[in-house]
Image 1 (cartoon, rainbow, N blue to C red):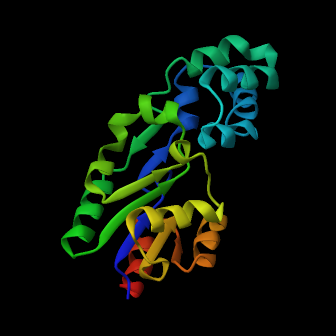
Image 2 (cartoon, rainbow, N blue to C red; image 1 turned 30 degrees about the vertical axis):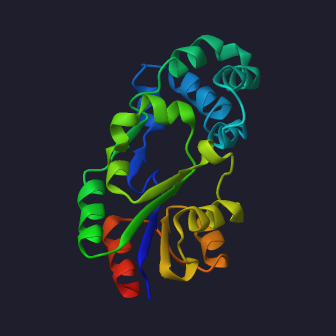
Amino acid sequence: MIKNIVFDIGNVLAGFNWREFYKSFGFTDEIFEKLADATVKSSLWNEMDRGKMSDDELLNGFIANDPSIEVEIRQVFSNIKGMILRYDYAVPWIKELKHRGYGVYVISNFAQKAYNECIDALDFLEETDGAILSYQVKLIKPAPEIYQLLCSQYSLKAQECVFIDDMEKNVEAARKEGMKGIVFHTLLQAKEELEKFL
């Protein structure tokens, strides 16, 4: 019997809007591609979510990836407000599930800088029963420990949880821990699949 719905944040409850955010600075296509490669597409990006490196260490790492765009990297990362945008359906969906008696939780790979500077886009967290954000626990999905931590911290049984994430590897990891899993593609698709479990 399913009692709890566990959401990812990025591209499920809120958009990871990095392309539009970078383009808002008016960079050329060449600079845009260089920025993407040096930052969000680099292995360092996961370390940002893991929360073990300081903002300065991360910034220096991104710059080391491509010193030719140091000015642009510093410009982008001075404040990333706007990189995360809440989806309009996030709060109503959570409230609807809670009204029906389900517990609602979050497991998300999330950086402290993103949390601090995009907090306005995360108002749906107030509606949940609990959240595990990667930077706080120094673990990132799909590590099995992050799913185990949610269950132990909030006294949940994995078999009573459905996990919804936009990345197959993260959903597969949740399934290995005993949860049901849904790979999020669209709101309609995810809701339809969820109803089959409830």
